[in-house]
Image (cartoon, rainbow, N blue to C red; front, side, top):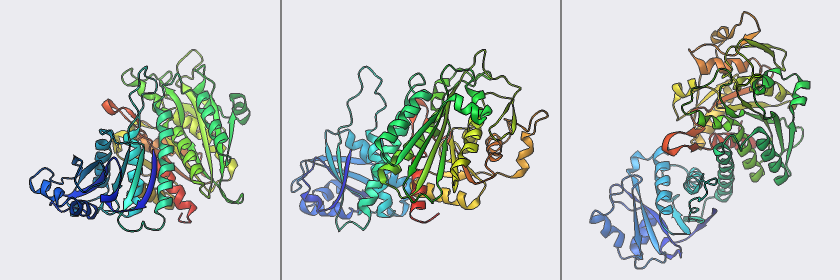
Length: 496
């Protein structure tokens, strides 16, 4: 979808559809007032008759309104002004694009920044672009007869007054984020027989070819053996698919600037290994590489933006399957850090590949390391599907990430990383065990990772509840690409 922003009068827009807002009290937004005046109060008459009540996220499509150049007018309910908040604004935008996608309109002009959406214009522009691309997204490319692609191809964000300074660059940023989210969703939605570790590596290499600022390197299992990645390699033992360790180095700033390293869990299918998962919903374990997918999506977004920052993506990727060669409960392995791990549950495998990737990340002399992983079902129990779990060994880093999540409406919630939880990982036979029991499972998983991140600023995002949806709406969400990109944008602009 193509996006643009311009100033113009709504009644003069020669478009397939012009979109304006109506409040619940019957008051027309500024853009709607201009349309109403040109149409000799046609809109206000409709409202007076009760055809449109203005309830938040309600819509009414009108055709061939006299005095209006556009073929259609879409009225969108804005609700009560005093009740407008971020969630309501996003609900309104999503309803808008659902309604537009139900029309044959190939282009539309949307007046949103002038219509009292309750937030600053830049925020509204970003959320508009994300809502538009979400409504247009299709995940049926592997069907023999895919659905017709979304009709809407061009969207103009229009303003009554001159657009504010920076809105054009904000629009370009938003489009880049949307493209990154689409890549993340595309990869997440692919089945495990297609999206293998080798496939992910090929996507990373393709990204490096597309963007000169990205240098991609792929390490093979023999390379990992030389590095002493016994923990990572213990997970892939039961699979015939070779594991890969992917690094993508984005050079957007001076070489002297220390990079931000993003480490994404890339288990392309997780059966649980010998600690086999129940069969119900096991198909959704193709999404266990969404951390890796979010790193790829974020790298694409910042490269498209040309963000002036150095960022490194590190992706450990493999399958976790049972076989005669698979790691067994009770086995003890040696991590790249030299610490030994007693594996009590082979389904707690994400931390086993991440710990070696986190140790490896130190080679880039990072300013900050953030790992992203669909790590624990316990996080879903704690936070549901609304917020990602956040842990950090630096409170200022946690605050920055929480703030970026609020800005992007891709929110996280900080959980404790207290020393009180560390004894739950004690082992009689190794330096640590890979699980800490049922109680506080998402916390003990983060505590495990913290033992490999003592030399740098580190944060951990558990996205097990937010990376995909189940049920009728099953599919990858593209989160936390908005949070990560906003954090990096803030860093590039000097606000750590």
